[in-house]
Image 1: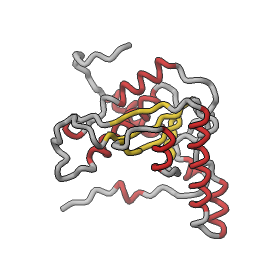
Image 2: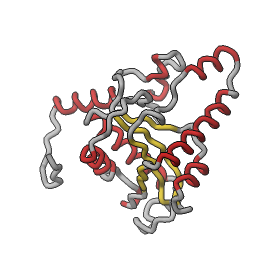
Image 3: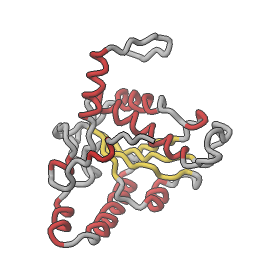
Image 4: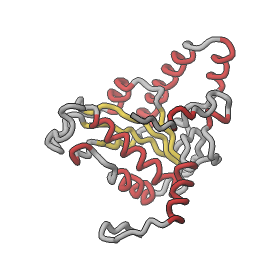
Length: 217
């Protein structure tokens, strides 16, 4: 059912509980089924992303669906090179554990989305970013998070691949020079579902609760 912005919603306790469940079960997915993603579902997720907050109402996000096999292969090659370089930064058991991790679903995910920030946009007329220009990038991150939750609510998994050379990806996709890569996303039906992060489950990093501390001044 289409969302009507004219509706006056009631967010009751039951809704709040389900929202908490959605947040808890949103995970970074690396293991995808190869089934195609319904186009209408993908478009609904992108529409949800467009509802994200943005500095000066600029909406600087630019989504690029990467469907061309040669471009996908070039992105996968960038990942392989960057992943090998990253593995070299560890030693001993930690290096072996790193190499055992599955850190991307580039080969399996039916949908690849590269998300850029148009840093040259005139939209918003510069409001709110004269002192903090990075808020343009932060706006795009907000859109990615909205997409992530919308996808999870529709049974899709999303994986954010950060082990890439952003300049190389920009070159591969031949986008305007004012666009900066913020995220490369894999999207599709997950092979499995878990409420805990995969890196916890596979022994890389236990939960760090320091970020949950509320500091008072």
